[in-house]
Length: 636
Image (cartoon, rainbow, N blue to C red; front, side):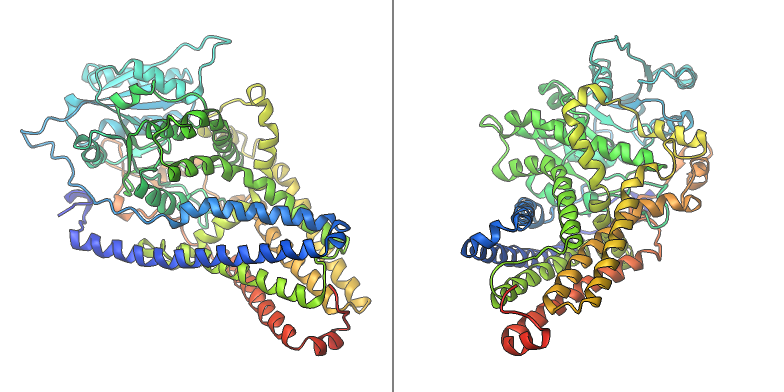
């Protein structure tokens, strides 16, 4: 019998239950793999045909340079598909749930654990709740200690810790504040954690937990079994879960794709990474690489990759044993995600170690290391594609070269590729719906897709600024940014100042689509021109729908949770320690009916391309009749 949590968390799974769950996951995974391979094959067929067509009509192609630029974008998208193939084709992990550590067994010696709790000007009330929760872990009191690492120099926090230290003689709590000399790199959170390591020399295991994350009392009992009897395991990680997600989760703060898809599947090839909080490290392995790695502001993934490159192993424990705070404000959200992007790009400095011959990563793991950075290059392609399609529609540029029957074949291949991609996206999320309601999965799927597009301009600007990173970047904890917005009563930079580009984009698309439709109707355009207008408009309207997300978030502040409401979202015991039941957590926000608009449009786009496929096949069969009816020439 493998307990998910002991009796205090209500539920357990037998080995047979786990086998059934795994086989169900594998069945959906095989379906996903089928559609993924179908998408790769259909897209490759489309690109090969397009290359041959452009070579055959090279003069006509060179006279339309925008077509070459479009082809470059399509090839880059196909390349990203091949890289993400590793992610999609990895099977789900078959790791079994282990029995929690029995701390009451006299024959079991509890290993010494030190909990590093880095703080940086978060609200003191939040920090104190995290400290109380850490001190309340169900573990041998003489075998663990909480080290509060105050990088913000908060006297109120210091006074709180000193009061607790006086109560227990400083046995389980230690307050530390490092001195940061001007001109000397202090490496932000990474430097703070390494400062804590210097004061934790007798620990066998190190836990890192963010200042706004609350650990479940069973955290250590649940996590240590994955390390104690497996000497090559360097760290074990659990997902993050947030208790302040607004209904609908417009900004996709929940990160369900990462915690419920990517990390569980990466765990099958020993590639699960640390996500910055809720991780338990084996101290000896951490010391062997010199502690937490300062090459990037994303010290969590950077340290993970370095450990894995040394041949150590990682474990992803898919149980929600911590709850915390997602960013309250739009500015704080942007700062957080841009920081993640900066960290991923900065990790290129470690590629020589991670991807070189001395690395013990296999080729699959190296591809994932590369893709971790490569993913943040996609905003360049997205931004270029949006601009290109807008100009093609605005200037009424042609979309093809060659004769009609050749372009009908090209449209057929394109339709098949887009349809299979859409089905693949639906099936991927359907396979993640086993632990929650289908409507919640529909919501998460649409939020994830929107996020990729509306976040692209911000990440694009971040990439352009990276060359001056050392001069321009100032680290601010997410909670600190939230506090600034809460004190001012508004977004620090103005409600809509950060979505000006999105507003211009949406307004421009609406204007140019209406203009083109009215103009084409007035001049009795043929079927080719109408297809060009409708096809480009569908893409631009789709991206505009996604661009509306941050605008809607800022336009309706009353629907957002306020930091002043935070305590009402939690339950507390008599000691003031926040309480939660892990098995009641899904990581999903409440359902919002507004997502149905996006789902309806998504299905409309799918139906559109199914219609285009059927029409292109019919036109190939009755080409002469169609040419007369559509008033077309035998060319595109």
